[in-house]
Image (tube, rainbow, N blue to C red; front, side):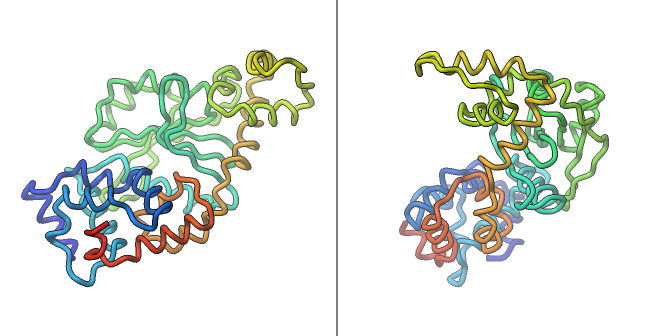
Length: 303
């Protein structure tokens, strides 16, 4: 299947962009990893009219690459394209799986941070694609500043001016080019001292909070399990903001470590790597995922 065929389909409006985008969802990746196949992938590919354009030699991995070619067209630019660019340019480009961890859809209060990367500090990237609204941006940024020392907004060209006007000067601004390179229009300031230990506690797992307290020499309370959460929270909020933030970075780099996925990521199509890094896999799951992406597309129709 030629990329030009897909681009033509996009121009004619005959393809369902939402179905194409959902091909890269964690649900599809998890299903492939658990079963070695994905009926959801087959259904979405059918909804997106991808089967009609497939050649007999195409593999599932080729379909992912060509579907990604649709999503990265400016008129169709989807959030996943931005996540992929951040994965390739920053996590795997500037950093590595040896030194950094990445989380997607990381809950902060009532918001979900699109991409968070933990290396020497904690950095969050809020995505505002060409198709997104900026209506929630100020509230999102206010929440993220309580947890992350560095906050960035990565936006489509149509949003850049509005983003500059909407966010504080310590927030960085980035733009995604048509070639999926990232332009840093303003650097984010690294300010762990303005974070909020209470919000950090609420954003991480209880066992992670325990590790942070222990690493700072805090004696853990001896209370019934029903009272443990409240007792730990009371201790955690007494930590200095910078101490809580530094502890979070150190602990999450270990508890959310992506290094076990390094081998499989290299064997997946680049278009699927960001999605794969957002899903925890057992070794057996990794083998089944590789089997699925290397299946002939004509056979995948019957999943």
